[in-house]
Image (cartoon, rainbow, N blue to C red; front, side):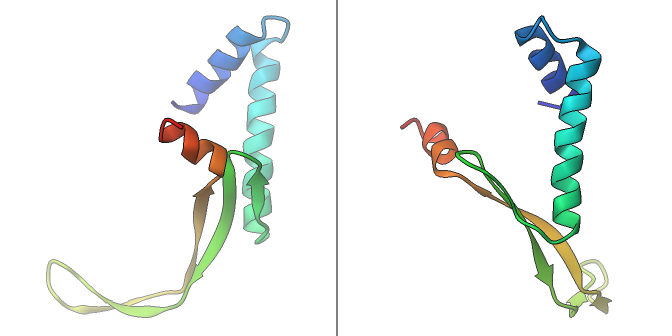
Length: 93
């Protein structure tokens, strides 16, 4: 499901809301999650999962095509851990 499909589904399920308002709500939620993660905070949605940021140190990698050594800079990557309810639902429990 992509963002526009999510917005359309929520607008269809809530006919008392305008689609532009639903779009603003969805965008605000995603923006707040992104802002919190950019500050290094953890975002937990009970039953769904938790978003966090992991730090990866600088390292020496290899170019798979040439085999040459390449310096890879340190970076921060997003990480998602599923919640128990989501995991159980995916596994049919």
